[in-house]
Amino acid sequence: MPQKGQDPYEVPYELKSSLKLHEKIRIAEAAACLIKPGDTVILDSGSTTFQLAKRIKGMSITVIALDVILASELARGGNADVVVIGGQVRRGFYSIVGRPAEEMLKTMHVAKTFLSADSVHLETGVTNVTLAEAPIKDLAIKAAREVILVVDSSKFGQIAPFKVCDLESVDHIITDSGLPSEIADGIRSRGISLDIV
Image (cartoon, rainbow, N blue to C red; front, side, top):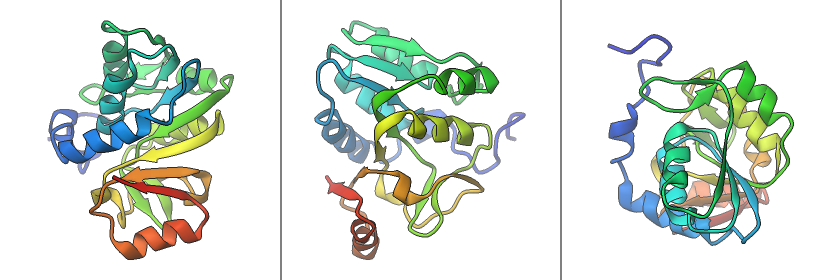
């Protein structure tokens, strides 16, 4: 039975974090190479961005975490300065949502946002199963000079209920080799950089 505020199709964090783990690790390793010392970046909530957090916490950077699990991992024995947005923590999913979080993100300007997604479709764009997370993701996109979508290939060709952004709002996508070639071609035809790892 879903908890209050939880979409019935949303995969619990503990299960999601173990799915496609090897793919998520490869994606995170590739994403980590895009971060330079001194960068300020936003890490979206998600199991792939958690893997990224593990790989960058030793860097001399500033990370704005949209998830308390990410913040905890980054703060544990790392060199990164960690900023946590204010708001409500979604029970069992750990993302931070709500008006205080949105207002804080409106004041931010960062080099890069590493965006996660529940679903990615060439025509519909990036969508999410949770209404409260969609505006947080949108503001994280607007805060960044470069937006990097880090998602495993199972997310492509799907549409979730709540729109985050058009695909053209993303500058760079990192995914795994399970991505169908026709989707890869569609991404590149839109001028979006694509890394398949």
